[in-house]
Length: 368
Ligand code: GDD
Ligand code: MN
Image (tube, rainbow, N blue to C red; front, top):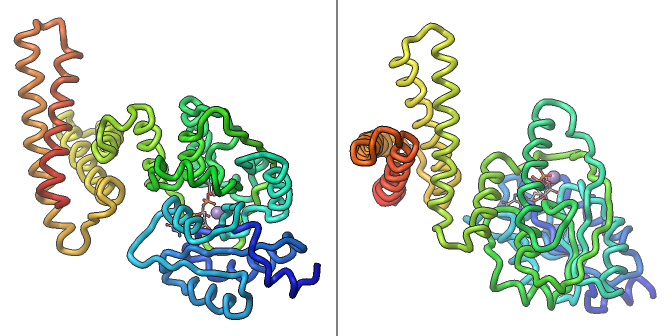
């Protein structure tokens, strides 16, 4: 079929590309799709969260030249999963593919995915068998470790075993997506995991291998905060939504606080500080990191900035201090009534009361 004839056909495949600060990757991306999907009727939907680098303007510019290019621009919002979901919902081809907008996903795999879908697969996942480029260096190794831990945690709770459950590169039949839609959480970045977790056992999933390319332009947006969101999502699935997600996020940050506290205590001790001073330093650093992490992650939608950040910190310190008093008080009471053999149980009870107190009060006083 000639190219001009294809342009007037409705798309058989909608390619959804979430992007944030990817201005220099947009044009190469469209060119890559054009080459990879030659002879097929396709469209691409870039979902941009109003990137400051002008990604949306660049997509608009290309859309004026090529009717297969479309833009969804979201203002005042962030998030990979919700971007993908809204991109899919803005399109209507019977088959949908999701891929990153930084050229790290090999577009030639799209053709294989299309064939698999047309041969009866309902979901096709591109699985990274090789990691490219950024796996050197300390940051790369750290990410690798986190990613491996994430994969193992995910495999433990998934109804369908996948070799790369964190993949951001997959294709799905629209009817399957729509049937799973009401159960998607839409938060964080693990859209595939969310889909697979909600999919019934009978769904036909196929994995195809691909080589993850190094990033040429721009930078990765998936940092520790995003990984925390992922851990929260796994916990949420495990507890079947019984505990509020925000509370789990808060508790998870609290756990990190304990690690920070003990590390700083050890360090200060090694520098010759007395136990009390070392513990004070550890607690202070832990409270500060907890505050900042909660602000970035637990309450990212109510994030404090400027002078409100300082006011919030002051209130948070006060709340946590009272929480510590409650923690110690409850533990002491438990120890007195349960008998002195029960240190662990008493201490745990104190910690739980402390966390619940800190959570309840800071979500009403600090992050209103
Ligand atoms: N609209 C929107 N909003 N897009 C976003 C956002 C957001 O808040 N955050 C990231 N993106 C876009 C990026 O612009 C990119 O196109 C894609 O989502 C993936 O983000 P990267 O920042 O490039 O992720 P990565 O390369 O570090 O992570 C890779 O590995 C993950 C698993 O470890 C990707 O392949 C992910 O898809 C994958 O889940
Ligand atoms: Mn990337």
